[in-house]
Image (tube, rainbow, N blue to C red):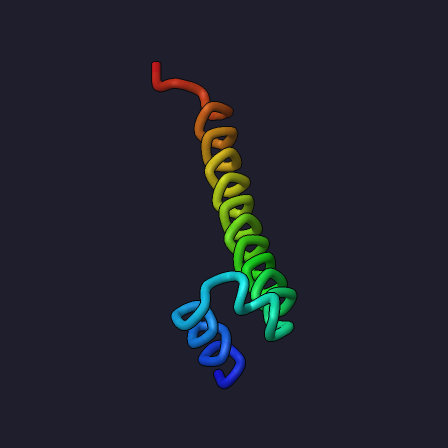
Amino acid sequence: MGSLEGILGALLEGGIGSLGADGLLDAFLGSAQGILQGALDNAGDLIDIAFGSIDSFSATTPPA
């Protein structure tokens, strides 16, 4: 949690330029990339589940 506090403090005090000067920009970007990748993976899983449900629903025969 300390690194997050450091990043947030740097943003509040000097913006993105301060992150670069403190050498924290790479950590910030890496963290953001990890969060975005996790969100995209979760969205992909939800889409797979949804299409699986649609496929199974459309594969059933309609009632006579």
